[in-house]
Length: 120
Image (cartoon, rainbow, N blue to C red; front, side, top):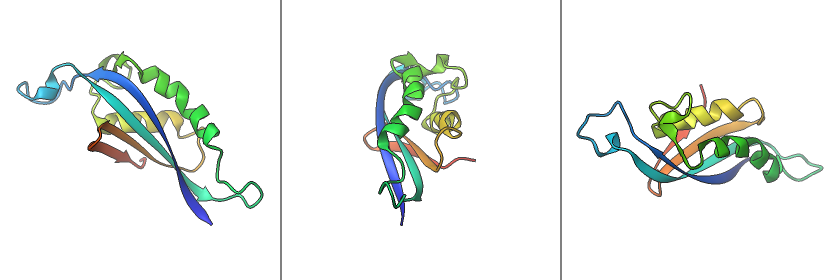
């Protein structure tokens, strides 16, 4: 049996998008209550009955989440243009080697706006 497990995390951060037109509202500094989802896919271990312990996902993601929480994302190395797309890829790159079966990183800036990133 193959499954996809999803663990959600939240953090607060500010950002400005320097590459949008000067008249765009996101050019100005503003904040979001971000929600990220990390999805892992693979087979269920017949002995444990799970793919991976949710606590293991949290253990791999929490250091990255802490680097972003209550920060100005533009000041984080590699996030000088911190769009949802760049943020999802940035998170992926920092957890992919420590999280076997990583399938997707999703970043929600709002309840209705987000980006799924599948690597590559």
